[in-house]
Structure formats: structure tokens, C-alpha cells
Image (cartoon, rainbow, N blue to C red; front, side, top):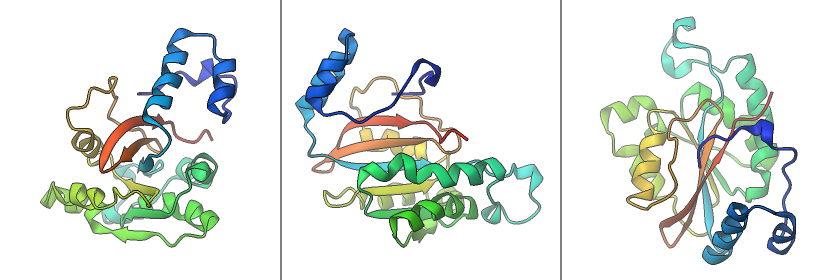
Length: 202
């Protein structure tokens, strides 16, 4: 979708399709429900999450891979589980950069999942091999894997474009702010819908 003005949203709740139909009054909203019914619920999500807010590069003297989250980022990380707990996450994959590790750590503990660390999702690896993160994420498009992938902004926009191919989704704002995510819903190795999730409010 792209970012929305959250000030226009009074409440976020989960509803059945039947209940949602009763609630909506705008034609565009009815079209969204109709689309949801048409592609069905037998899809699998892969969540492409940008790490939470980190210290700025100029504030950090060590190796960039060791740059940690700042105070806001730490608060965002603690709220990730509340956003993604309803997606039935079975695996969490993350760049081996410290800011990504710290982003998924609280969620991993809450879900009792051992995170899978991969340099293929890191900026350092991406600079040397642009295809490495794409190959890695393609391997995760399986019907029995509900996956969170935590990585970086230079990588995630390219992944989204490659994974959706030439499909005519509504305009996607591909730059993610810290803590934001795209959720790609896929079936049989094909992305059929894309959602955007804003960063946790802290």
C-alpha cells in the first residue's frame, strides 16, 4: 500500500469477512474485502522488516555491523511481537548486523523461536553480491513457513521489486522507515498481495 495517516484510524481490530462486510460503508473498502475473498486465505506471509531505529552512523565509532539500536529503537523492538503475533510466525531470519539482531530479539523470545542469523541479509554482503539476499529470501517462499526477515533499507526495496515482478499492485512506497515492514502474501511461489505495516508506536 504505502504509509497511511494513522490519525484517521480510531481502532484496529481483527474481523471475520462476514463481520467486516457489515462494518464497512465505503465502496473502496468493499472492493478490498472482495479482493481478499477472491485470492483466498490460503496464502503464506513473509514479513520483510527493516530494523528498528539505530544510532546514526556518525554517532558510532566502531564497525557499522556492530552499530546498536538507540533508545527509541529498543522500545520499538519490544513492541514488535504485539504487531506480528497473529501471523503464526514459524521462523525468524535476520542480518547478522547488531541493529537487526537487537530488533528481533524480544520477538524471538516471546515466540520461543531461535533466530537464524545470515550474513546474506547484511549490507556488507549486498555490496559484494546483489543477488545474495534475493536468493536467500526466494528459498524461504515455502507454504509451511511463516517468516520474518529482518534486514536493511538498501536491500528490502530491491527485494520487494524483484519478488513482485511486473505485477500491477497499487503504488508501493518502497523506502521503509526504521521498524516498518512489507508483508508479502504468497502462494505456490508467487506473491499475490502486499501489505505495509508501520513501525510500532513508542
